[in-house]
Structures are given as structure tokens and as C-alpha cells.
Image 1: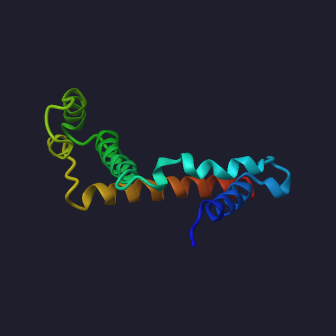
Image 2: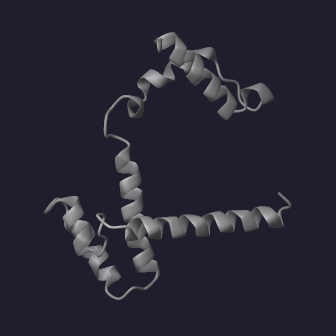
Length: 128
């Protein structure tokens, strides 16, 4: 069964691997294994999806502004000035980002691929 002790063991192993405990990079005390209980992401329903949707919406907005799309700057300023005057999905639509379609996701994937290409080019220059 999935118990607190089991979660402590799993999370403790993940922490040690992530921080390089066994390689002497960072010492992770066993007390940190209970940290999982403090992370609301693990047990609040429909909580973390907001990170990915907001990242996608903001990337789509940024791509429009950086790509010098006509009217994008004005729409962005209007969007951030709108506060809570309407539902977020409606405010985004007015700003040119329709979160009910594929365009914001596609723009985000294009931007992420571009970033990964840049990282790989830098690593290649440094000889990985």
C-alpha cells in the first residue's frame, strides 16, 4: 500500500538523485524525505494545470509581440489593464489568444523547440 513511509522513501531517493547526493554534490539529510507532504501540487486536484495553461497563454502573447504582429502590443496592454473585468479566457481572446484552439500550444512548442535548438548549439560549441 501507498503509505507515508513509502512516499518518504520514494521522495527521498528522488531528492538524493536530483541533487547529486551520492556524487557528493549536495548532502540531502533524511529529514527532507517528508517534504512531499508540504507540496500542495501532489494532492490538490486541478491545481498545477494553471501553470501550463498560463505559460502557454503568455508564450503566445509574447510570440505575437516579439513577432511584431500588427496590434499585438496594444492588445497586450489592454489585456494586462483589464484586471478581473471578464473571464480570463475571454480576456485572452480579446488579446488575440484563443485558448480553445491549437494556436497557443503550437506557438509554445515552436518557441520551446527554438530554445532547445539554442541550448544544443551552445553545448556543441562547448564540446558538450
